[in-house]
Figure 1 (cartoon, helix red, strand yellow):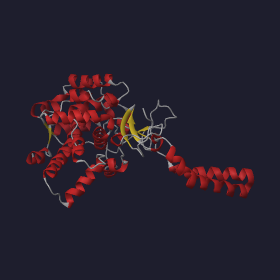
Figure 2 (tube, one colour):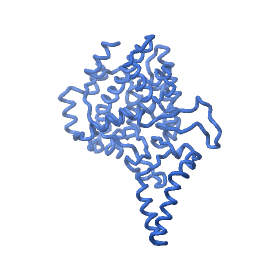
Figure 3 (cartoon, helix red, strand yellow):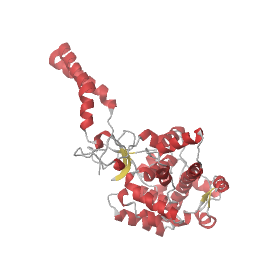
Figure 4 (cartoon, one colour):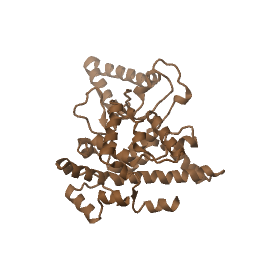
Length: 370
């Protein structure tokens, strides 16, 4: 596993202060001036040259959960030994482009309110939202909560705890899938046209950036811009959070445990201090779901997952979470065991019942376009 870290320039001020303190102890004003000159030369002249020879893993950033590759950003196409990679193996991602809409979503909802479990249950009851009805009529009430309730970990009845978790996460997954469906409809309409308007070209460029398609290849964008089966997303969220009871889920809305070295996040209690990673946190649950989908739709580790999904599309078949889960063995260190756990969660909890569920009322807009 590659450990990819961000260079933190926030420490520059501290470094300068340390240099000055050392200078005072050695030679006073002369030493301070001399050391400052050396620091400036190193920073502006030597550092750029040295950086070019560093391995790309040190210079670039990656979001991970456990040994899971989330998003990789590369500066060049060189291997550790300095040899050039084939051009098709090079993916240059820009963090701001890939996560721009996710970060914006975080900024908008940074003052979100956490409801307690009893209030949430009453809300679901008042809106007649329950999973039994959803399994039958396939309609989900658009109840978008921003936080999981702290009390969820105190619910001793396993069935009730799972139901509450699914009720909270299900609308969020459907909402993000709806956004992708709308984008795909627009993409296909653009593909069919011989000439595109300036507005359409601008929209395409935005999507190329969000999905890391530097080649601006429509066929690649079409494969990446697609849904994640609802049952698969629910299973992974359940696995990563212990059905909503993990500290990362409750304190940071981290439904899928993404790691970051950028400084913002929650520190794992049992992690190696030398690793310096944190679990990426979100202001709202919706942002976590969107980041998860962007991960599977852009990272090269899940290329086979996307290819298998595209193959199901070409055959006119539904997106089968059991089939597609087989291509997520790289999501965790446990590999195939992780896949088996996901498949068990899907089967034992009948999560496939939600794959064709529709979110109201936003689903009406989709139906009018299809």
